[in-house]
Structures are given as structure tokens and as C-alpha cells.
Image (cartoon, one colour):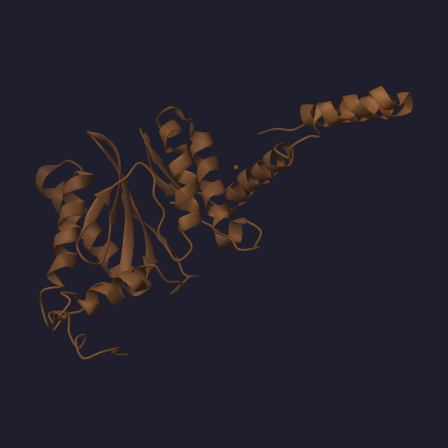
Amino acid sequence: MFRNQYDTDVTTWSPAGRLFQVEYAMEAANSELSSHQKKIFKVDDHIGVAIAGLTADGRVLSRYMRSECINHSFTYESPLPVGRLVVQLADKAQVCTQRSWKRPFGVGLLVGGLDESGAHLYYNCPSGNYFEYQAFAIGSRSQAAKTYLERRFENFVDSSWDDLIKDALIATRETLQGEKLKSSICTVAVMGVGEPFHILDQETVQQLIDKFELVGEEEVPAAEPGAAAEEGAEEGDAAEQGGDAGQGAAAADEGVAPMEI
């Protein structure tokens, strides 16, 4: 649906210098369109992609990325560097903003990969821009996840495999609006040195989520000891009850174990 006289095609500029068709594509990338379809795709053993927006456009671009990886591997007998693939992807998206008979891709992509220079995470948007991050989230309710990742990203370099997945699951949980996190509504993909890109099965993801739920119980703040002490000073019976409660809380803590793309 056209909203004004300046959005009939992608090359028409408004008096304010805006390209409305590109802005509409950016909105689509942050919407809940096709929210229940597959969102994570394998590109190569060292590259994976997560999408937000129009799934059909995401499949087209992921197929293009696979083709580029295969061609590079066949020609040079080495994996395609992640940064080079992202630049080619951005060029392909940007061309669609320069042709009146085309439309921008209505999808945002998180491209994660591992090459000789290390691990990389890029965000490609429909305008053709791309940015590299240490952690990022995209989609209609991604702001809560980004806020959590901004607080934690400095620790990711020294984090273990389990800790990284735990942070990803917690960030995903932050985006839920009253809905319980379970394996049927999230997908976890993993990649690392000596570990090709693969998607964890639902049973494994559910086990990780159950482990995270125990952490949630452990992190419930206990009663302040000062208040218990004051009660103990006033009545001996209250002090005894406070002591029993403290022992129960300690026993409960001893049995507790420590939750993209």
C-alpha cells in the first residue's frame, strides 16, 4: 500500500531527502512477518545466518550466499572469508535501492562466521549497510535482548561454550511477553573452532532451558539478614524461626545448579 506520492518506486526521493521504499523495507525487517517460520540457515561449515522479516527474501539471500561459498571453495580450494561474503551481500542488497523496477529486500540478516582472522558477527540491513558486532539481536522485540547483550558482551571473549549459550537463551527470554521460554519457540545454532555450524535439536535445547530455570530460582533474592537480626533482638522465638529459615535457604542453595543465533 502506498502512503504518499513519493513512495511509488525505490528511486523517488521525497522533498525531505527520504527514500520511503527503503524505509518500508527496514520496517519489514523489524516486524513479526513470518514469525513462526524457520529463521536460521546454514550457509557453509563456517558460516550461518539468522533472518528477521520476509522469510522468502531471506531464503533467496541465503541461497545466494551458499552459491558464493561453493564457487569460492571450488576456485580457490579454501573457505570464503566472512567479511568478503558480507560485502558481496551488501552490494546485492544496495543494487535493489538503485533500480526503479526492483524493490529492496524486506529482511535483515545476522551473519555469523569463523575464518582465519577469528569469529565474526555482521548485521546486514535492506539499505545495503552492514555493521560488525560482538553481540546483536534483530526483530520486532529485539530491544530487550540488545539491552541484555550490551550489559554482558565484554565477558563473551572469556566465556565458555555453556556460558555463551546460556546468555543467548537469557537474551531470547527477555524478548518474550509473558510467554514461557521453551524449545518449541526458539532455535539454537552453534559454531566454533573444530565444530562446524550445526543446529541443536529440540531435546538438547530443552535440557539447557531446564538448567536455566534452576538458575532463575537460585537468583531469587533472600531475606535481608539485618531484618532477621532485629527480630531476634526483640523476641527469642522469632530469632529461632529466623535461624531455621536461614538454614532452609542455605540447604536450598546447595542443591541449585547454574540458561539465537
